[in-house]
Length: 388
Image 1 (cartoon, rainbow, N blue to C red):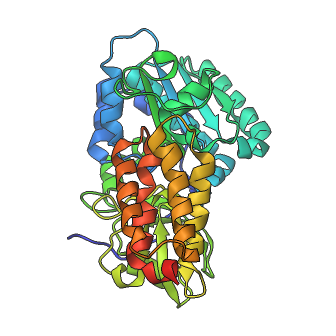
Image 2 (cartoon, helix red, strand yellow; image 1 turned 135 degrees about the vertical axis):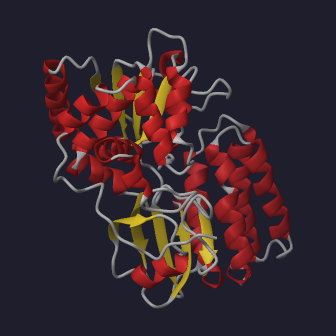
C-alpha cells in the first residue's frame, strides 16, 4: 500500500500569488466541461468526510436540464473536535468565494449560498462585508454569480446536506429521503452542488496551480492535502495542513504527548483507533477518511467517559425523525450505563453492538448510520474500561 510520511504543507492559508479575479478569468477562458475535467483529473474528493469525487458531483449537476441551479457551501461545522472551517472563513474567505464562483460557472448556476453554523455568527459581520465586496467585483467583471449568507440555528443534523436544504427553505432541519440526490433535487428542489468549505478552497487552488500540481501531494486514492483540527492530549493543539496518506503512527509521533493510547479519527462520528493499530492505519480514503477532526487521548483518559459523552451528544442531536436513530441512541447510552453499574452482564455489550450495526443499516441519515463507528471501535478495543 502506498503511504506517505507526515508532511506539513501550506496551500489553504497561503495568500501569496493568488489573485482571485485572475483565477476566475482563467476559468472563464475555458469551457464548462474543461473546468469540470480539471477538477476530475485532480482527483479531488469532498473534504467533509464522505469523500465523493468533486468533479463527478459537478458533472452530474451540470448535465441536469434546469434553468435554475445552486451552489451551496456547507459551513455548518458541527462535528465535535473540528474547528478548521472557522479559520478558513476567517482568514481566507475569498478562496471559498472563488471556488463557489468557479463551480457556478461550471454547472450553470447564478446563485451561491454559504450556510454558516449558528455558533459562528460572530464571523457574520466581517464575512458579509467580504461577500459584498466580492459580489461587487464580480459584477464589475460581468460575471453573473452572486453569493448570499445564511445562518443555521445550532443543529448538528443540519450538517447533513438535505437537512441543510430544509433549514434554508424555512423548515425544521430533518433529512430527506434519497434518492433523489442533491445533483437532481437539492435546494428548492433544484439541481444543487453542495461542497464543504475546504473542498471549495482546493477548487480555487487547482484552478490556480493546475491539477497536476495538486496531484503531487497525497496518494493515488487520496490526492492532495487536508486540514486537520488537532485537539486533546497534545502539546501541539491547533490547525495543520498535512499531506494525505500518512500512517497514523507518523501523526501520533508529531502530535502525541508520548503516552497516546487512542486517536478518534473523524470526530464523534469517526473511528477510535487504539495504539496497537497506529502503524496499520492510513489517514486517507484508502484507510480511515476524516472530515478533519483528530482527537488524541492518553492513558489518563477513561474511554468509557469518552464513549458516554459521544452517546449523550448523539442522543441530544438526533432529529428524532427515524426510530432507529431516535431510540437507538438512547438505548446505547442506557446500555453502557447499565453495564458500568453492574445492572447488566458484560455480555450485554454484544447485544448493543448488534443494535449499533442495525442503526448503521436502518437509520435514515449519516447521524444514526455513523454511531456504530465510535461505539463498536471503543467497545472492541477498550472493553475492559467499559466493564470495570
